[in-house]
Length: 212
Image (cartoon, rainbow, N blue to C red; front, side, top):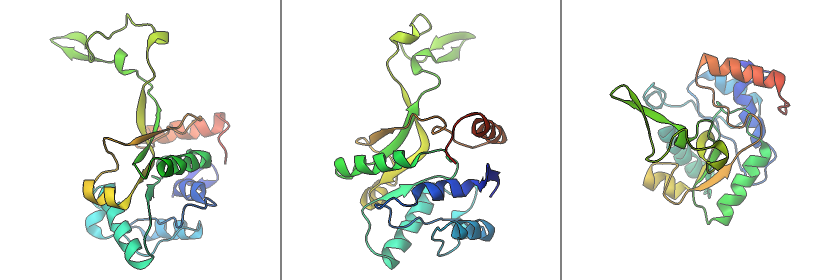
């Protein structure tokens, strides 16, 4: 509920989904009535509060999504995909969501996952063995020039789209055949997990042309 710019953090993700024809509903799963009310006022569907067993420190977003999916299909009907938009990724663009849905449809409903360019290239990463730096990848290291490094991407947490069947059968948003959705606009890779992340996100909003 903390304000980021002019809106509560969760509202950024709710607003990003508005007006996209392929999205039939934006359902918010939370165990907090205050968050639920903010989400309702922003136009989201909040039909219940999340059960206590799915709101612990060890509960997974996967289980919360399956719980929401089971309720939705039992009460609202069949859907062909579940799109997870985590509120900790406020700067994803509407255009990226639309591209991700298009990729999902074009790939016959294979899982689609948002990715961003890696800040630390894996060929420049090391481990410490016996007090010495050793490249994580054989043959890699700082002798490689940046312009010679192949593109590398990381999962950014901003977009997950999966079929109900795959989600239930595999119990995962990932798979060997998952399709990447490159997200390269400024701030789309933001993932707020700490107080420091929050400060950096506020600074980014103040100094970068992030649509509000």
